[in-house]
Length: 472
Image (cartoon, rainbow, N blue to C red; front, side, top):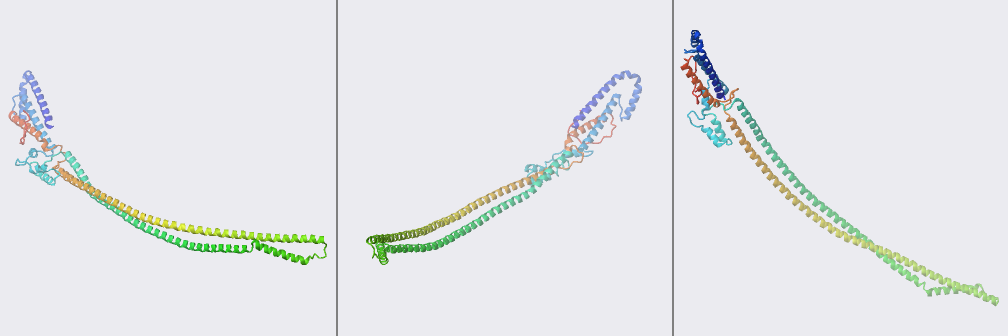
């Protein structure tokens, strides 16, 4: 950068000097009349510039080379300032530009660090050691802006990585806490399921005992009812027998023969009464016959009435006993129906009791099966939770290793930045070494020319040798 611009500047100055010299030569022929004055002035100028010149053009050329010399010195100083190594930095630049140590050997620390890699702790340590040895010790590798830009970048990344690395401990604790909570919840579910099963069994047993007790009570009540109904049935049947016996006994006194005997006696008794009260003596025959007919008719009426009464009594007895027996028969059937219903209820209750026992047993077995299934599911979930925990912990361990390696790598990169350049440094000593060598060659050539062609006249400092030539 510096060499190209300065070379163009020198070339322009030389062309300008050549043009001026040519013009002066063309005018020298027409200025002979003023030769004495010009020679006097040239002599004074030569004396003032520190040399003896044969003509005016040589004086201008020497002045131009002296100016170039001063410009080159200023450029050299500017290069030193830009590199941040101060004035008179030739030796420092030469030292910083050497890739080998003072004895010309390779820096084994840096070489080993490069071979091992920045992710290796030993490589990191060797890299740091390599920064302190060899010809480049104390030499900035970057400009001020580049150095702190890189350092800030590495430092920010390092801070973030260390923060992430520290955060992994919290992450690991959270993972373990989540795992413990999940296992505790699953264990709580299992304990609750076992408690529910125990409560279920106890409830089933209580229900079964209640059912059995209820069945026993119903059996006892039914037995009492059956016994009472049995007594009622026996009593009713006894009443039927009594009613039938009374009917038979009463019907015996109401047979046709009995009725005729009773009615005959009634007629005979009426005749006797009539005979006593209504004597036929002293009556005419006609009157006697007429009265006899009326008495006969009255006796026939008594007979008929008597027979009718007996018939009605017998009919009433038959109807009364039939109704009584029918009522008793209905009562007997009602009692028998009640007893049948009670027997049916007992049979149904017995069957229901057996069903309840079977259902209780099935429910108990189903509850145990459900618990077994739940226990298996919880065991599977615990196994899955443990596997997930191991995977997460493996991931955390991997990230921990990666962050650790990154921290080592960033520390190595920060250490490999080398010495911090001074404020304002826009380049490095090693970067300007080539241009500085060219500038030193240019200075040496200008000094040699001024010393030989212009008689010296400028106080020049000795400078270190460069690597490339400048002015030809």
